[in-house]
Image 1 (cartoon, rainbow, N blue to C red):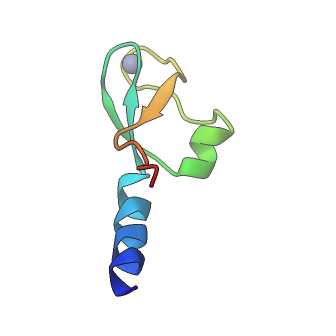
Image 2: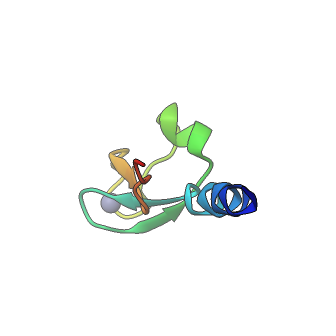
Amino acid sequence: MVKTKIEASVNRIFNRVFICMKCNAKIRADILKVRDKKVKCRKCKSNALRQKKKERKA
Ligand SMILES: [Zn+2]
């Protein structure tokens, strides 16, 4: 089950990249800050962000 560990660490990296749902700007931020809505889009100042990569459901 080594592969699972690698995927988990890769997910952690990609989890830090978010996309603004209004203007599609890429924003790198801590997931905890995004959850607390402390992160705003630089362009439109919206805090409606989504993760770049969707988590796969097995
Ligand atoms: Zn935006």
